Image 1 (cartoon, rainbow, N blue to C red):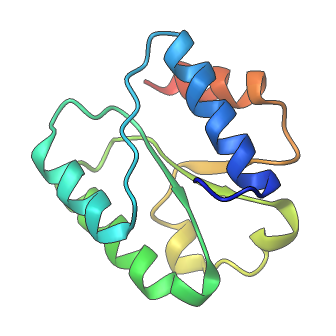
Image 2 (image 1 turned 45 degrees about the horizontal axis):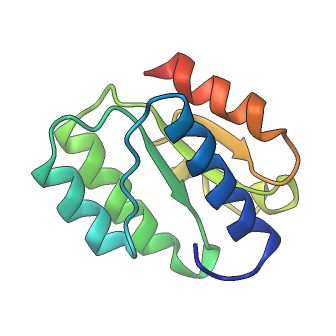
Image 3 (image 1 turned 90 degrees about the vertical axis):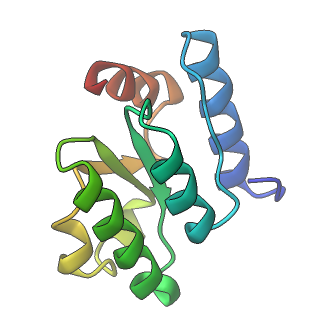
Length: 117
């Protein structure tokens, strides 16, 4: 999230927008940290997860863990439209929807997230 890439800047701005709307945002540095945070904080109402296909096994493991603890929580994958076709179906089966981080407006993304919680 600290990188100076377009995706990282969009994530930081999305975080700011959601905080302005009153959401408390918890950022995990990695997938193991995400599991620990999810396990220790039952107040979490939504999960956003970036996916890198070279780490799909780790992503799937994290999604399975989250779903085992809460089958109804909205989980969004943050990706670009061109990468969506590379994401395996076994991962897609675990998520609620996509967030097209660079293609959709941040206001639209923030609204979708707010509506799901």
